[in-house]
Image (cartoon, rainbow over all chains, first blue to last red; front, side, top):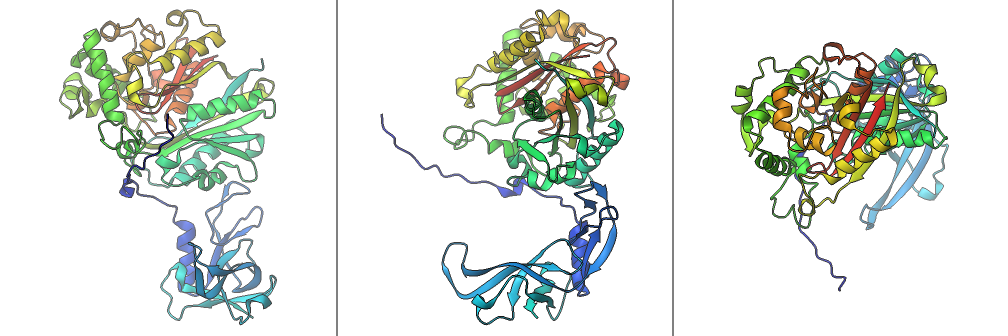
Length: 149
Length: 381
């Protein structure tokens, strides 16, 4: 008896799938970004503000449809300095990805952080603001980055 | 041993293409079930979802769906198999004594979001079956159907008549996706031949839809309903995955699962004691093979069963009075729907398809090519 192995060539045709996704939360969010606004939905029962805002509250299990605009300033919640790419190869220009809690929102938005020169000096809890692309088109990429204030 | 009851059930009206996404389907269904039962998500101790990352097309797929059934900050898990296996899991969790109530849900977008035969083909054995693409779920069922028909002289006409029986029941079921008011033997015989002897008309109705049930411990059951349906016997057996190692006609895993469930429920003569059967048949041709493996009819008797209408509503053991998966087969929910439909019969809530005086039912679900894995429940009112 041996413990040989073999490698078998195999492929998947991913066109086997097509997805129908719920569009309400995304549509509202990018409708806002087109006008350089951050929009979400607030639960009328428990008061939670979701950004992006789905049409139901996961805590109360009820339909919600109260659209709210939240502040474009907030707090740097957490961050990491990207020193390597997904394959582990060091990147030439390290950059920071972060989560930000905008004032008035219970959700955290993700983005990149700018306005720093030495990453050792960046601290959680710093105040940040949204920076938009010059031209917005109604896309997630309208939100260029967060800037340290 | 503690007993477990089904205390609530609900299914969607199944469709070939849902106008809303899966998250909305299950959210609406579960909320409406809670409302019917006069309960909230806080009455549920554990949430068990039947789904399959492969048929869902994304990994750890329940992360997107469990919040929609009320499981946020709750105990939840997923069964990568038919919903009846999720119900089996819920049943065991309740028996553990750690939980009194469980919500079980199965759902699928198999009508519109993925091509069932193609995704199933990718699940075949990668060493022997996939490289040569000799066999898939359809052709596995065709091998079985051909062998049965040859051995027991079950003709194309007999199979067409059995198909029509199911389609007629499906026509009277408000939840069916497939409605063929003009179903006839001639029409079935004229439908496209896919893998001999299987024609398009024999294939179940892959659909978008969902089904949810609430199970409860005995001590809590009366709090939820005055019509509990008791799960008196369960059996779950799997055969070898590789089709070359199985006798497709004997269906040992199904026969064994049924035997276990009958023994647990104290059933000695299923032909006398079972009032109806709801079976997870992906193809009409599976019905004779399954019912005989389960001891509901004599081996090889399908010709007479069809001729004498024994499996019709009003016959000795109606089989799939709901129309079965030929009316709607939302993959992963299908076996759970069998439990809901059989419970509806025992609770006298089956509408036009109601069987008079039904007290004991047998419910079945399958997974894998050629029904490789089988689950059987015996339920009573």
